[in-house]
Amino acid sequence: METSNTQCLVVGGGPAGIVLGLLLARAGLRVTVLEKHADFLRDFRGDTVHASTVRLLDELGLGEGFRRLPQSQLNNFRLPTEDGESVVLADFGLLKAPYNYVAMVPQWDLLDFLVEAARQEPTFTLLMNTEATDVVRDAAGAVEGVRFRTRDPQSGETMDTGELRAGLTVACDGRGSIIRQRAGMVPREFSVPFDTWWFRLPRTASEHDPVASISPRFGRGDVLLSLTRKDYHQIAYLAAKGLDADLRREGAQAFRDRISRLRPDLADRVDTIRSMDDVHLLDVKLNRLSRWHRPGLLLIGDAAHAMSPAGGVGINLAVQDAVAAARILAPALLSSTLDESHLAAVQKRRWLPTVLVQTFQRVLHRGVFARVMAGHEPRPPKPLLFVIRHFPGFRKLPARMIAFGPRPEHAPGFARRKPDA
Ligand SMILES: Cc1cc2nc3c(=O)[nH]c(=O)nc-3n(C[C@H](O)[C@H](O)[C@H](O)COP(=O)(O)OP(=O)(O)OC[C@H]3O[C@@H](n4cnc5c(N)ncnc54)[C@H](O)[C@@H]3O)c2cc1C
Image 1 (tube, protein in one colour):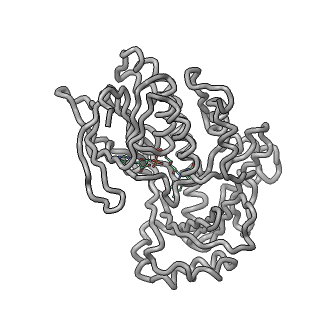
Image 2: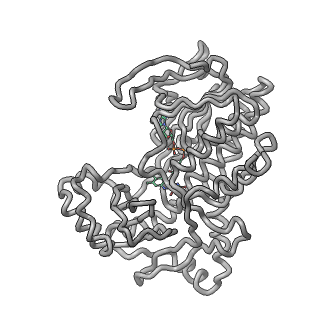
């Protein structure tokens, strides 16, 4: 692999890493992205592409191609209420077109699409099946690259190991960031009342209409979300954190009963859950680092601040981090003047949006999820319900906050292109 003259090494090919790689390559920088998996086909990585990201894709000249990806549109975001009903918290239809919806796009389609765009740039390199295992430091302790191993996709056996060096390493390796751990950085953890279990259920022939919905169902102690894929339902079961061992001890039939209770319309196919091996735990985390950088190293996206699925904003926040990072870092990397102050500037730019969005998620955790997990009806704050019900125009404010987030980023000039050029 010819990567010896890489200027920026990006660890992790999720939304943050791929967008950062694309933008830096468009600035003419030699960038190498390492992704430990052989493809982007993970069952669940979140599907929501918010207006801030759609607008960014337009600015990058990729909007038309993005709109051709199979997708559906979410027009509002509802909050469950104590009477078992729900109320519209955010009405995206009140926002100005064409950024007046949340697109639901399987994340592998989005990542494949972005990688295809990045591969148009001669200075972009993506190494799949390549896992960073440690940081490499210089004599003064500054990070100057990573150790990696490549694996055989079939057997999982290690095929090769080595080191890659660059002037800057950016860790975009998600919630379980190995780079963060090896750099000795420990995030502050916030309590999360639930975990998520993922599985698939088939769609029947009569259901093959496009459905744009997350279809939340609230029970006493659990929640079910379903995303509609081409020929199956991707289901998320949410229940109290730490319940995994109990669920597995209870076994598949008890789990099928839980699902049928929440979604009687899917009871006819829960038998396709053959055993609890078909049900995958995703340990939900909400945390953030107080400092996102060290000499030679920057962390962005979930590696710097793991997001809960509440509100479905993490992908978009990770993308926004990448855009801000590219805008601030590209000129310094091009002129070889990069120092830690540039890395600190990225954190400074993205700190407020991160804290605000995580605070919003913690309010949702307390007001909705913690109550449901404890077997109560969800109880959003009464003043909020009063305002939503009596002043429908208010729904534009949360819609804007969810669709664009605080301090939305725009594509830097060097990355902009004419539509789908
Ligand atoms: C259950 C759940 C549901 C969610 N749903 C949504 C949603 O609907 N919408 C939304 O916006 N957000 C959602 N989120 C949050 C969202 O998934 C994250 O905030 C977002 O994916 C962060 O992007 P990222 O690029 O920082 O990290 P990730 O998406 O985690 O990407 C990290 C990448 O790095 C790779 N990697 C990891 N370690 C290494 C290594 N050592 N070497 C090389 N590669 C490595 C991984 O394979 C992965 O491809 C959800 C989160 C959870 C837990």
